[in-house]
Length: 111
Length: 123
Image 1 (tube, rainbow over the protein chains, first blue to last red):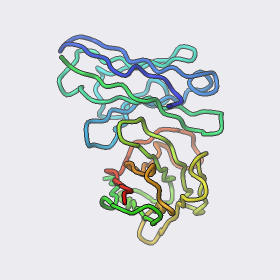
Image 2 (cartoon, one colour; image 1 turned 180 degrees about the vertical axis):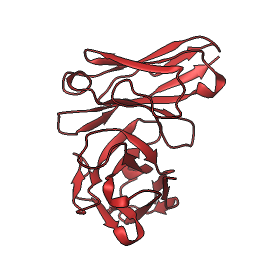
Image 3 (tube, one colour; image 1 turned 45 degrees about the vertical axis):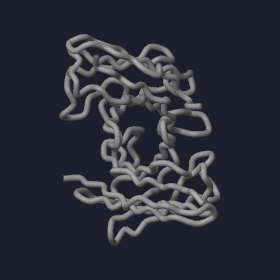
Image 4 (spheres, rainbow over the protein chains, first blue to last red; image 1 turned 60 degrees about the vertical axis):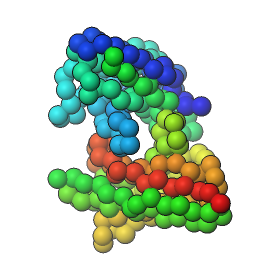
């Protein structure tokens, strides 16, 4: 059971936009601005795509954006492309016993 | 360029030990911590803890105390994860990762990951 809750799957057609939610508590997502998102293709290591709620690392497409409201963070991918098909994980700093917690992951399917 | 390279897959019997290596290059090794993350098959990642690469002081997450040991050899810019008394439930992919920011600066995100090491525990 992951500390952060994500939908198991989302899907969209090429060119469309999708949003993945990540729900936590005031002890993690809602408590600070250290939410990050990772993209993971099958058999590959996670790749950082968003850090500190909404910052994109150099080289990450500007089709990806993220935000946070209260205890929920969101990742939006616009102009869906086939290469976006992957698993996406959110991660947050937590003031509870484990200082970093992950979501269970969301599988994005590009139809 | 920054590279983080882990050792290869391991197949171990229950009760045995395993040591996973994580060699970092392309940056000042002792400026950044090394964190360890476990990902069981079909599940989300789980943060295991981190090691201070300047002092060698490890910090373990709840659930990763006792059988799990983080260590370093700074002469070869390598971090290690050793797991003893292996159990079937330790079967997972293990990643080492470098935080975005240098030690002393909060970031709580990882921008460089090793390729992962599969540890399979089976009799």
